[in-house]
Image (cartoon, rainbow, N blue to C red; front, side, top):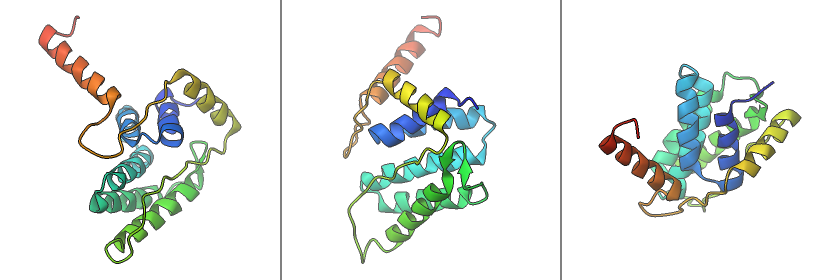
Length: 164
């Protein structure tokens, strides 16, 4: 099975860089390309939930992680070459812990997506060697260099027309 380059980038940004903003960017593009397939939306929501909580938005993190776990529940344990069952239960457990955050606070922690398919693992490693590591922002309003460059290019293109 061949995997979409956007999915491969998502896995690299998720597991290697912990750049959940970029995860959102690439997986949203794939989700739209795949006619809004709920599986991709659920994976996207896991990243968004972690992004929110890491940046101090407990409510946003809880809502996204709960929604992700719910959206992923009808898919097989092993889907898209990953241990989706594990990710789903970890997202649900994270959301549950966030429910009690006010009385039982805890430190942010990352999740890992366990790659099951050896071919996917090879493709992710190849993609990782091609994608420059991106250190995500941890706190504050900045979204990181990749986002700033993307916004700059969008603004430049809109000022100069799409043929530049």
